[in-house]
Length: 475
Image (cartoon, rainbow, N blue to C red; front, top):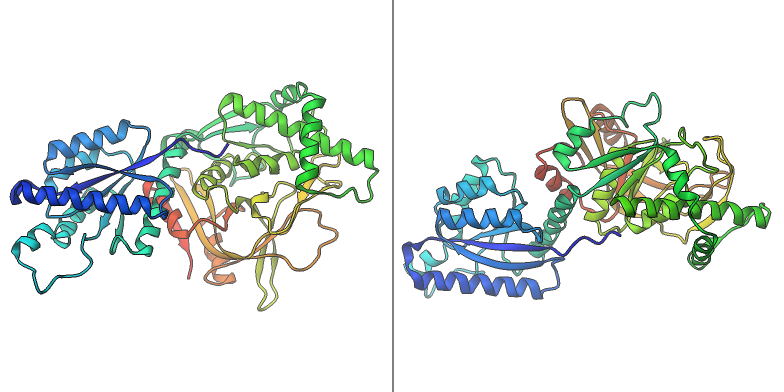
């Protein structure tokens, strides 16, 4: 479900006709060698395609127009092999609606002091060209990415790869469709927002459906479908009956499976890639969706609880960026305030994303003191250790703001026998108190998306592509 359509990135080389065709032939040959090596390196998640040595405004403008209308093109990479007069780039760059990366590199790694002459200097004046080209992008406020260094270096290739993932996620943002089953949780401020502005700025389509629409879909699910999925679950998870009667346990797990199958069919038919539900809107349902949501999260669907469509969309966006690895909806719940142990416990009533699991999930059935429904089945597991990032989108009426906090994820090591939900600890940077203070002061929400696979710089690059206000909280 997460799979995006095949994408590629165009490579455009800046030059001019001043130095003659022989130099332009060298420029093209060097560019093709760089592209061949990068594609063969195994470092990049997407293919680079050589487009052209661009020497005139007309050529550049046509390339950018074509890039806009080629769906397979996720972005454009430019390299200034020689000096490229920047006025030639103005029209095309202004028209470009895809992400842009300026690769500030040079074909040769070193200066050949024994043989260098003016012909070599004219052919290999990337330092000259970079500054002219960089100036016009800055003046146009393009918010493009700049990667600097020798193109064979692993660090340079890693930066290009990270940016490619961001660029693809940016493009996929305009395909995000969120299905809202019910409205927002009543009287909660941070989960509400301007859906029209979200569609204008981020491309998100947010559609409302009554919970009865889902209930009608659930009635069409067959016992054969449910039994097949139950058998699948027996092979994937530890099925923990606990103190429940075995028949009671199986019945309640199968009710979650019924919800799961109905949700998937509903979203596939409508082209939805994210959804949200609300424990205050459960008319006609026996259980609040729990394991059903978690299993759909594992497939790549975005989600947030309590009608929070913004976080559901951000969840889907971050999952695309992370290739659906260790990324999911989270809620700040409880603090550990002991000196030297300060941390945040993230969890939710039921719907914690299993891509964050470091332990094999257990399927358990327990009462839930909210929603006034049957005991729901849920997946229970512990989160992961490692560096991560937590993000939250706030709507201030006149603008959106993205909160970005680098964190240190911690797997809980202490048992919690009376807390039958999945759980994840994290420590905010630069310190617990400074991180929490900055988050609150800047209006960050209690619903977040936590990723142990996305880098903070990638989220910053994504915010810049949207020309979105953001706050970095880090060391």
